[in-house]
Image 1 (tube, rainbow, N blue to C red):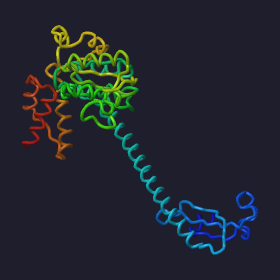
Image 2 (cartoon, rainbow, N blue to C red):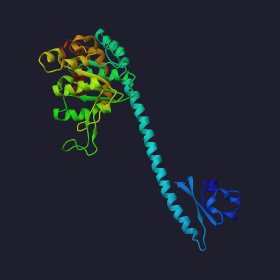
Image 3 (cartoon, helix red, strand yellow):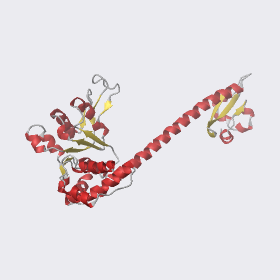
Image 4 (cartoon, one colour):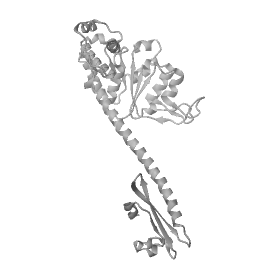
Amino acid sequence: TGMVVQTGKEVVVPDIKKDPRFLGKTKSRTHAKGQRVSFFCVPIKLESRTVGALSVDRKASQGDDFEANVRLLGIIATMIAQAVKLNNLVESDRMRLRDENARLRRELKTKFNIHNMVGNSNAMHEVYRLIEQVANSNATVLIRGESGTGKDLVAHAVHYNSLRSEKPFVKVNCTALPETLLESELFGYEKGAFTGANKKGKMGLFELAHMGTIFLDEIADMSLEAQSKVLRVLEELQFERVGGVSPIKIDVRVIAATNKDIQEEISKGRFREDLYYRVNVVCLKMPPLRQRREDIPALCRHLCRRIADLFEMPPRSVSPQAMAALCRYGWPGNVRELANVIQHGYALG
């Protein structure tokens, strides 16, 4: 076989006992005792490169068609070569995806590094301090703040600055999920759990976040029934899929966010007090933009660069008169509204 790999040519030996290349090697062939044995070996070629060899011993008989044997081995060798090629392609894709995944994770860690967040006000420095303090703990975090203040950004920052940064970050928009789908999306379901269920079942978002972080955005919009089920998961760190009976254990960090006054929601019976205490281990309050007006110029410069890159346009700057007007405005929509205004300015030229 070594010669076949070196030369890339098949070898046919009608009787191995009469071939000097097999001297001293027939003893290992116990099946060959007292019999005439033929040897066939063909190269396994991938494109024009020999990657291996396929050999066969067989009992020789009068009138053997050696060419037919070689053709059969050649067909099998071709099939093996195709399997090797496919395996190489799969492995190449796996390596490419692994490298791409690692690159994207590095980019995310850089993007959500607190040193790359925009804002130098005292209010934002307090946010950065809390992110650094809680990132490497497993404590649940409740991010509170008006819409558009950057709660999503902070949730990502906590995750990507933590020891779980290499693991999944799973976001759940509690407002967008209808009540009828919320349970199956959060906890998954077994096959046949309900009409229209996937035949193979489905993993839930809690399961997908195992060893990582699950971000429950706008948690106060969940129904009381859904809140009770989330509370149970936080208490027991396990759950059953819809239609399932076997508990699934998980290790996840929970980050929640809301733009509502939780105390008011509790007093009106719309949010469970016990769940509040579970998610409010660390409370991180995002300041509205009107309370950190000194950050508006830096935010404008950042948004101008980002939008210019997005639309492949040359970067622009905000005139002093326009900047003064932006700093005076109340910004009820916060940073999201500011981004919309900057993008509107780019669109209109």
